[in-house]
Image (cartoon, rainbow, N blue to C red; front, side, top):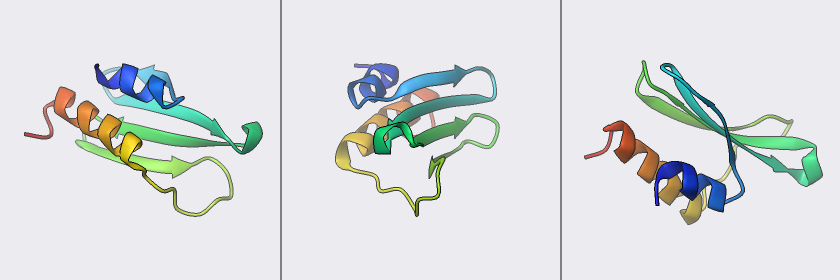
Length: 78
């Protein structure tokens, strides 16, 4: 299973993939907010955030595994 499939399995949608970013989003709270996972290719970093007034997002093991697959595909994790 590739990273996109791993994120989709968790209910995320890939909303951007280009030379700069890969971004996945998932609606939460009945559509009132979004959980966002973005990977910046230039800076070689990633961020998990909420697009709502919520606090710091949690990362469960399913999301951790999907992030790990994406990091490996980008060549950032050996």
